[in-house]
Image 1 (cartoon, rainbow, N blue to C red):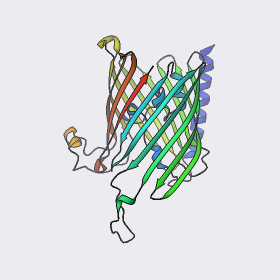
Image 2: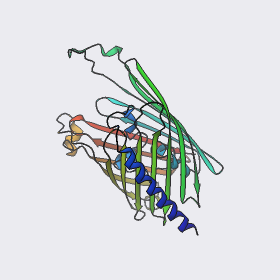
Image 3: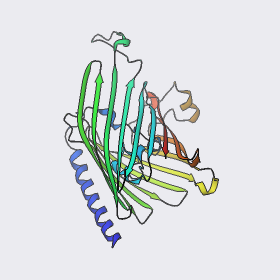
Image 4: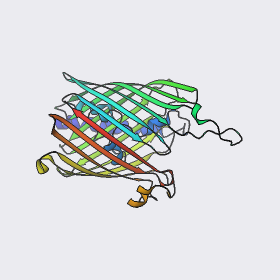
Amino acid sequence: MAKPVILKIAAAAAAVALACQAVMAGGGAGSGAGAFMKLPIGSARGTALGHSYTALAEGADGLSWNPAALATVSQRELAFSHISWFQDYGGNYAAYAQPMGSWVVGVNFAYLSIDNFDVRDIYGMGGNTETVSVNNTFGSVALSRAFFKEKFMLGGALKRVSEGNDGSNYSSMCFDLGAKARLFDRLLLGMSLQNLGATGDVVQMMRTGAAWVINDYITVSGEIETPSDSRTRKGFGAEITLPESLIQVGKFSLRAGYFDNDDTGENYDDGMLKTLGLNRISDISLGAGFYSNELAGYGIGMDFAVAPYGALGKATQISVKIAF
Protein backbone atom coordinates (compact mmCIF):
# COMPACT_ATOMS: atom_id res chain seq x y z
CA MET A 1 0.00 0.00 0.00
CA ALA A 2 2.90 2.37 0.71
CA LYS A 3 4.27 2.50 -2.84
CA PRO A 4 1.01 3.63 -4.55
CA VAL A 5 0.59 6.35 -1.92
CA ILE A 6 4.18 7.54 -2.41
CA LEU A 7 3.77 7.59 -6.18
CA LYS A 8 0.60 9.70 -5.88
CA ILE A 9 2.39 12.14 -3.58
CA ALA A 10 5.34 12.35 -5.98
CA ALA A 11 3.00 13.04 -8.93
CA ALA A 12 1.19 15.77 -6.99
CA ALA A 13 4.51 17.34 -5.97
CA ALA A 14 5.67 17.34 -9.59
CA ALA A 15 2.46 19.06 -10.71
CA VAL A 16 2.82 21.74 -8.03
CA ALA A 17 6.47 22.24 -9.02
CA LEU A 18 5.58 22.81 -12.68
CA ALA A 19 2.82 25.26 -11.77
CA CYS A 20 5.09 27.22 -9.43
CA GLN A 21 7.82 27.30 -12.04
CA ALA A 22 5.44 28.85 -14.57
CA VAL A 23 4.39 31.54 -12.09
CA MET A 24 7.85 32.42 -10.83
CA ALA A 25 9.35 32.67 -14.31
CA GLY A 26 6.96 35.48 -15.14
CA GLY A 27 7.23 39.20 -14.45
CA GLY A 28 9.59 40.75 -11.95
CA ALA A 29 12.86 39.76 -13.62
CA GLY A 30 15.66 41.87 -12.25
CA SER A 31 13.52 43.37 -9.49
CA GLY A 32 14.48 41.19 -6.54
CA ALA A 33 16.58 42.29 -3.59
CA GLY A 34 18.67 39.94 -1.47
CA ALA A 35 20.35 38.46 -4.56
CA PHE A 36 22.96 36.82 -2.31
CA MET A 37 20.24 34.32 -1.35
CA LYS A 38 20.83 32.65 -4.74
CA LEU A 39 24.38 31.64 -3.77
CA PRO A 40 24.99 27.95 -2.92
CA ILE A 41 25.65 28.70 0.75
CA GLY A 42 25.96 25.99 3.38
CA SER A 43 27.19 22.90 1.54
CA ALA A 44 30.37 22.42 -0.46
CA ARG A 45 28.87 19.17 -1.71
CA GLY A 46 25.98 21.07 -3.28
CA THR A 47 28.39 23.53 -4.91
CA ALA A 48 30.53 20.72 -6.35
CA LEU A 49 27.46 18.98 -7.80
CA GLY A 50 26.48 22.00 -9.88
CA HIS A 51 23.73 23.12 -7.48
CA SER A 52 21.88 19.81 -8.09
CA TYR A 53 21.47 19.11 -4.41
CA THR A 54 17.83 19.61 -3.41
CA ALA A 55 17.02 15.89 -3.71
CA LEU A 56 20.29 14.81 -2.03
CA ALA A 57 20.44 17.38 0.77
CA GLU A 58 20.81 15.82 4.20
CA GLY A 59 20.92 17.22 7.70
CA ALA A 60 22.08 20.58 9.01
CA ASP A 61 24.16 21.56 5.97
CA GLY A 62 21.20 20.86 3.67
CA LEU A 63 18.86 23.26 5.50
CA SER A 64 19.80 26.18 3.25
CA TRP A 65 18.77 24.11 0.20
CA ASN A 66 15.71 22.21 1.36
CA PRO A 67 14.17 22.29 4.87
CA ALA A 68 12.94 18.71 4.37
CA ALA A 69 16.61 17.65 4.55
CA LEU A 70 16.40 17.91 8.34
CA ALA A 71 14.19 14.82 8.49
CA THR A 72 17.17 12.64 7.52
CA VAL A 73 18.81 13.39 10.89
CA SER A 74 18.83 10.61 13.51
CA GLN A 75 21.23 12.31 15.94
CA ARG A 76 22.33 15.85 16.71
CA GLU A 77 24.32 17.60 14.00
CA LEU A 78 26.50 20.68 13.77
CA ALA A 79 27.49 22.07 10.38
CA PHE A 80 29.95 24.82 9.46
CA SER A 81 30.81 26.21 6.06
CA HIS A 82 33.11 28.92 4.75
CA ILE A 83 32.43 30.30 1.30
CA SER A 84 34.89 32.46 -0.60
CA TRP A 85 33.17 34.01 -3.60
CA PHE A 86 34.89 35.92 -6.36
CA GLN A 87 35.69 39.64 -6.07
CA ASP A 88 36.55 39.30 -2.34
CA TYR A 89 32.98 38.47 -1.31
CA GLY A 90 32.40 35.64 1.18
CA GLY A 91 31.44 34.57 4.65
CA ASN A 92 30.44 31.78 7.01
CA TYR A 93 27.48 29.50 7.62
CA ALA A 94 26.54 27.56 10.76
CA ALA A 95 23.63 25.22 11.47
CA TYR A 96 22.39 22.87 14.16
CA ALA A 97 19.86 20.02 13.94
CA GLN A 98 18.13 18.40 16.94
CA PRO A 99 15.86 15.33 16.71
CA MET A 100 12.80 15.60 18.97
CA GLY A 101 10.74 12.44 18.77
CA SER A 102 9.18 12.20 15.30
CA TRP A 103 10.29 15.73 14.44
CA VAL A 104 13.62 17.40 13.78
CA VAL A 105 14.23 21.04 14.69
CA GLY A 106 16.98 23.04 13.04
CA VAL A 107 18.47 26.53 13.10
CA ASN A 108 20.99 28.15 10.80
CA PHE A 109 22.74 31.48 10.33
CA ALA A 110 24.95 32.93 7.60
CA TYR A 111 26.98 36.13 7.46
CA LEU A 112 28.59 37.40 4.25
CA SER A 113 30.53 40.56 3.51
CA ILE A 114 32.96 42.05 1.04
CA ASP A 115 36.51 43.30 1.53
CA ASN A 116 38.35 45.97 -0.48
CA PHE A 117 35.07 47.36 -1.78
CA ASP A 118 35.68 49.67 -4.74
CA VAL A 119 33.89 52.94 -3.98
CA ARG A 120 33.41 55.56 -6.71
CA ASP A 121 31.40 58.75 -6.94
CA ILE A 122 29.22 59.86 -9.84
CA TYR A 123 32.36 61.12 -11.64
CA GLY A 124 34.13 57.76 -11.34
CA MET A 125 36.59 58.96 -8.70
CA GLY A 126 37.67 56.55 -5.96
CA GLY A 127 36.52 57.03 -2.37
CA ASN A 128 37.52 55.93 1.13
CA THR A 129 36.90 52.18 1.29
CA GLU A 130 37.49 52.03 5.06
CA THR A 131 34.20 53.75 5.78
CA VAL A 132 32.13 51.44 3.56
CA SER A 133 30.33 48.49 5.12
CA VAL A 134 28.67 45.80 3.01
CA ASN A 135 27.18 42.81 4.84
CA ASN A 136 24.40 40.31 4.22
CA THR A 137 22.88 37.86 6.68
CA PHE A 138 20.12 35.32 6.96
CA GLY A 139 18.94 33.02 9.72
CA SER A 140 16.09 30.58 10.05
CA VAL A 141 14.30 28.20 12.38
CA ALA A 142 13.05 25.02 10.72
CA LEU A 143 10.90 21.99 11.46
CA SER A 144 10.81 18.75 9.49
CA ARG A 145 9.32 15.26 9.69
CA ALA A 146 9.56 11.97 7.80
CA PHE A 147 6.57 9.81 6.84
CA PHE A 148 5.99 6.29 5.47
CA LYS A 149 9.14 4.83 7.03
CA GLU A 150 11.27 7.77 5.84
CA LYS A 151 10.12 7.44 2.22
CA PHE A 152 8.63 10.94 2.22
CA MET A 153 9.76 14.07 4.10
CA LEU A 154 8.29 17.52 4.61
CA GLY A 155 9.85 20.61 6.13
CA GLY A 156 9.36 24.32 6.61
CA ALA A 157 11.44 27.22 7.89
CA LEU A 158 10.81 30.77 9.09
CA LYS A 159 13.62 33.03 7.87
CA ARG A 160 14.93 36.55 8.36
CA VAL A 161 17.01 38.11 5.58
CA SER A 162 19.05 41.29 6.13
CA GLU A 163 21.10 43.35 3.71
CA GLY A 164 23.33 46.32 4.56
CA ASN A 165 25.03 48.33 1.83
CA ASP A 166 26.99 51.39 2.94
CA GLY A 167 24.46 52.59 5.51
CA SER A 168 21.39 51.47 3.60
CA ASN A 169 19.86 48.62 5.62
CA TYR A 170 17.05 46.29 4.63
CA SER A 171 15.48 43.27 6.33
CA SER A 172 12.58 40.96 5.59
CA MET A 173 10.77 37.99 7.06
CA CYS A 174 9.92 35.07 4.77
CA PHE A 175 9.58 31.30 4.84
CA ASP A 176 10.74 28.15 3.03
CA LEU A 177 8.87 24.95 2.23
CA GLY A 178 10.44 21.69 1.12
CA ALA A 179 9.73 18.05 0.31
CA LYS A 180 11.77 14.95 -0.43
CA ALA A 181 10.72 11.49 -1.59
CA ARG A 182 12.66 8.25 -1.89
CA LEU A 183 11.23 5.93 -4.51
CA PHE A 184 12.37 2.33 -5.01
CA ASP A 185 15.24 2.99 -2.56
CA ARG A 186 17.54 4.54 -5.19
CA LEU A 187 15.51 7.32 -6.82
CA LEU A 188 15.31 10.59 -4.88
CA LEU A 189 13.06 13.54 -5.66
CA GLY A 190 13.24 16.95 -4.04
CA MET A 191 11.55 20.33 -4.22
CA SER A 192 11.95 23.52 -2.22
CA LEU A 193 10.28 26.92 -2.41
CA GLN A 194 12.43 29.57 -0.75
CA ASN A 195 11.89 33.11 0.52
CA LEU A 196 8.12 33.02 0.12
CA GLY A 197 5.87 35.74 1.53
CA ALA A 198 8.72 38.20 2.03
CA THR A 199 7.75 41.53 3.56
CA GLY A 200 10.13 43.09 1.01
CA ASP A 201 11.40 42.17 -2.43
CA VAL A 202 13.69 39.29 -1.48
CA VAL A 203 14.35 37.16 -4.53
CA GLN A 204 12.28 33.98 -4.40
CA MET A 205 13.66 30.65 -5.50
CA MET A 206 12.18 27.37 -6.59
CA ARG A 207 14.38 24.29 -6.79
CA THR A 208 13.21 20.97 -8.23
CA GLY A 209 15.60 18.07 -8.50
CA ALA A 210 16.13 14.35 -8.76
CA ALA A 211 18.99 12.01 -7.96
CA TRP A 212 19.65 8.40 -8.86
CA VAL A 213 21.88 6.33 -6.60
CA ILE A 214 23.04 3.90 -9.28
CA ASN A 215 24.96 1.76 -6.78
CA ASP A 216 27.16 2.17 -3.71
CA TYR A 217 29.78 3.89 -5.86
CA ILE A 218 27.99 6.22 -8.29
CA THR A 219 25.29 8.86 -7.82
CA VAL A 220 24.02 11.28 -10.48
CA SER A 221 21.72 14.26 -9.94
CA GLY A 222 19.95 17.01 -11.83
CA GLU A 223 18.10 20.17 -10.88
CA ILE A 224 16.09 23.07 -12.26
CA GLU A 225 16.56 26.34 -10.40
CA THR A 226 14.08 29.17 -10.97
CA PRO A 227 14.73 32.54 -9.27
CA SER A 228 12.07 35.22 -9.45
CA ASP A 229 14.48 37.83 -10.83
CA SER A 230 16.20 35.99 -13.70
CA ARG A 231 15.95 33.07 -16.06
CA THR A 232 15.61 29.40 -15.15
CA ARG A 233 18.93 27.55 -14.92
CA LYS A 234 19.85 23.86 -14.94
CA GLY A 235 22.41 21.95 -12.94
CA PHE A 236 23.80 18.42 -13.13
CA GLY A 237 26.21 16.51 -10.92
CA ALA A 238 27.99 13.20 -10.55
CA GLU A 239 29.59 11.68 -7.47
CA ILE A 240 31.93 8.70 -7.25
CA THR A 241 32.27 7.26 -3.75
CA LEU A 242 34.58 4.70 -2.23
CA PRO A 243 32.40 3.32 0.61
CA GLU A 244 33.49 2.88 4.20
CA SER A 245 33.31 -0.90 3.80
CA LEU A 246 36.04 -0.65 1.16
CA ILE A 247 38.58 1.73 2.70
CA GLN A 248 37.74 0.97 6.37
CA VAL A 249 38.42 4.39 7.93
CA GLY A 250 35.59 6.19 6.15
CA LYS A 251 34.13 6.96 2.75
CA PHE A 252 35.77 9.21 0.18
CA SER A 253 33.98 10.98 -2.68
CA LEU A 254 34.99 12.80 -5.85
CA ARG A 255 32.44 15.14 -7.44
CA ALA A 256 31.90 17.15 -10.59
CA GLY A 257 29.03 19.35 -11.67
CA TYR A 258 27.66 21.60 -14.38
CA PHE A 259 25.56 24.71 -13.75
CA ASP A 260 24.05 26.87 -16.45
CA ASN A 261 26.00 30.06 -15.74
CA ASP A 262 26.52 32.84 -18.26
CA ASP A 263 29.85 32.95 -20.10
CA THR A 264 32.12 35.39 -18.24
CA GLY A 265 35.20 35.23 -20.45
CA GLU A 266 38.76 34.14 -19.76
CA ASN A 267 40.72 34.55 -16.53
CA TYR A 268 44.34 35.72 -16.83
CA ASP A 269 45.22 36.19 -13.16
CA ASP A 270 44.33 33.07 -11.17
CA GLY A 271 47.22 30.60 -11.17
CA MET A 272 45.11 27.74 -9.81
CA LEU A 273 42.57 28.02 -12.62
CA LYS A 274 45.34 28.14 -15.22
CA THR A 275 47.01 25.05 -13.76
CA LEU A 276 43.74 23.11 -13.82
CA GLY A 277 42.87 24.37 -17.30
CA LEU A 278 39.71 26.03 -15.99
CA ASN A 279 40.53 29.67 -16.73
CA ARG A 280 38.03 29.78 -19.62
CA ILE A 281 35.32 27.90 -17.74
CA SER A 282 32.31 29.39 -15.93
CA ASP A 283 29.90 26.47 -15.67
CA ILE A 284 31.91 23.52 -14.28
CA SER A 285 32.50 22.74 -10.59
CA LEU A 286 34.74 20.18 -8.88
CA GLY A 287 34.95 18.86 -5.34
CA ALA A 288 35.81 16.10 -2.90
CA GLY A 289 34.53 14.86 0.43
CA PHE A 290 35.34 12.53 3.29
CA TYR A 291 33.11 11.11 6.02
CA SER A 292 33.93 8.79 8.90
CA ASN A 293 32.06 7.39 11.89
CA GLU A 294 35.31 6.62 13.71
CA LEU A 295 37.02 9.99 14.28
CA ALA A 296 37.15 10.72 18.04
CA GLY A 297 33.91 8.77 18.50
CA TYR A 298 31.91 11.16 16.30
CA GLY A 299 30.62 11.13 12.76
CA ILE A 300 32.65 13.79 10.96
CA GLY A 301 32.36 14.88 7.35
CA MET A 302 34.55 17.34 5.43
CA ASP A 303 33.86 18.64 1.93
CA PHE A 304 35.59 21.01 -0.47
CA ALA A 305 34.42 22.57 -3.75
CA VAL A 306 35.82 24.94 -6.35
CA ALA A 307 33.78 26.63 -9.09
CA PRO A 308 35.50 28.82 -11.72
CA TYR A 309 33.72 31.91 -13.04
CA GLY A 310 35.89 32.87 -16.00
CA ALA A 311 37.26 36.42 -15.86
CA LEU A 312 35.59 37.02 -12.48
CA GLY A 313 37.76 34.44 -10.70
CA LYS A 314 36.70 31.41 -8.70
CA ALA A 315 34.48 30.48 -5.77
CA THR A 316 35.54 27.96 -3.14
CA GLN A 317 33.66 26.45 -0.24
CA ILE A 318 34.77 24.27 2.68
CA SER A 319 32.19 22.48 4.84
CA VAL A 320 32.45 20.45 8.04
CA LYS A 321 29.64 18.44 9.65
CA ILE A 322 29.71 16.69 13.03
CA ALA A 323 27.12 14.15 14.16
CA PHE A 324 27.00 13.28 17.90
